[in-house]
Image (cartoon, rainbow over all chains, first blue to last red):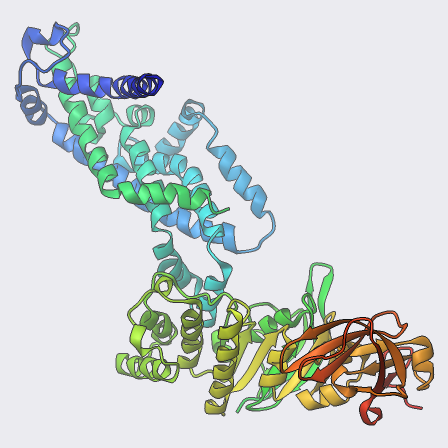
Amino acid sequence: MPAIIKNTAFYALVVLIVVLAVFPFYYAIITSFKTGSALFTIEYWPTSFSLANYVSVIEAGSFPRNLLNSLIVSGLVVALSLLMAVTAAFALARVRFRGRSLLLLTILSVSMFPQIAVLAGLFEVIRFLGLYNTLWGLIFSYTIFTLPFTVWVLTTFMRDLPIEIEEAAIVDGATPWVIITKVFLPLMWPALVTTGLLAFIAAWNEFLFALTFTSSTETRTVPVIIALLSGASAHEIPWGLIMAASVIVTVPLVVLVLIFQRKIISGLTAGGVKG
Amino acid sequence: MTVLRLNNIRKSFGTYDVIKGVDLEINPCEFMVFVGPSGCGKSTLLRLIAGLEDITSGTLTFDEKVVNSLTPSQRGIAMVFQSYALYPHMTVYDNMAFGLKLAKGGPDEIKRRVNEAAEMLQITGYLDRLPKQLSGGQRQRVAIGRAIVRDPKVFLFDEPLSNLDAALRVQTRLEIAKLHAKMHETTMIYVTHDQVEAMTLADRICVLRDGNVEQVGTPMELYEKPQSTFVAGFIGSPKMNFLTEKFADAYRAHTLGVRPEHLEIREKDGTWNGNLILSENLGSESYLYIDIGAKDPLVVRQDGSARQKPGDLLHISPINDNVHRFDQSGHPARA
């Protein structure tokens, strides 16, 4: 008897956690399939199924364009920050120079500032560089915020790669660039995938900078567009459209995570356990 | 056919001197072994020759050309590391071809050289495997193969056998000896802390101690004429017996060294007498530990297994007066 009670209690707890974690997403999905006044009745099971919200989100105005913006911005942020982080990590992990640990700590402390603290200053910089209301402004600011984390993780990971492998490559006549690209990168896939994915998610969901550094609908990214979706009048909030857009926005992330799922798991342990 | 000359080579890490002025000439096609206890700087010296560490002062020349500031590949060296250091994501073939590809060799040339090396080391069967699918001994062969394909002027080994088990170590040692015979135009430098490897492989041995060269010579020179108590104790197994005080005084020396294989048990009239403490039987030979009243027990090597029992009184004498006399400073006594 006690075993059964134990088991039931255990699975009850599991169910509770899953429901708490998944319910908001579930509710968003079933809401996105509702139309008209059905939106305002509280139902826990899908009662109606209509793609009307999706159709109107995609057809209405600039949503596809904004989706593309988000893809471009997030993709470039990942590419740029990984490129810079890998090269920086090589220097920080493998080249002996004065002030190396100080530099590492500075990098880490940069990432501690809240976005809002640097918003005004960054706004000035972006205006000065002529990047205001362009995608480059977003790419620039996101990269700044992604790099400390990426550099830190990759440095730790690269430090754990055996030094003899690097020396063997040096003996084979490899330049630092060849060592990074031909020897280290293939060994670092798990770390790259993990950090790259986290950087992508951060850029994809970012709201504050996207709202501040862009002003026209054509340059906005999806999170801002969703927040600014409005109905026929100022008092009507188009929940159906918002939910449909949110679901569409989440799909790429889910797909990415599913593709790289195994790599993420091995990446998270590979960097951490082998100290 | 490369001659290496080390001219007052020094290496410091910060304020700590690791190599304290080494002068050494390594002859063309020679198999030179650096040997010494851990921390004596032998690996550092090898890495200085390889170009993996910067030389603090002094000059290193290959064929009279100063190579201090050249990279390892410009020096034309190849190196086998203790931990194999294979590229884990590349197949055996790619591991061996990597250096050639970087040197922009033609694809046919690369293929020919890799296959040649693979055949020499009998690893043709697993050219398309990954390092993780190989055993330790196979990995070390691949590491040696990777060095061979580069056709180096100087071939460096950094304790290549330390990670192998005892049986494999003997086998691989033989193969390295064969390799040296085949690559008779290549100068080889080999670092080890194991004096058996040094004695069996070397043309000449360089014994290092605390960053200085203690003695350089052929294995037999070091064995027969050690220039210090350090070398005398380091070369030979089991270790040479050292006797002081009244035992040495009789020979007009400060320290008297006698190798266990140069001692014999007599029926009577021994130079020294003592009780057997313990005997180690290896079947083909045995080692007797005898208390003759000196600081350490005297070790005597005997053919076959020992018949004596612990506690027996034994009479021991050096064979043909084969003893080494050292003065106060640890060097051979003249008078």
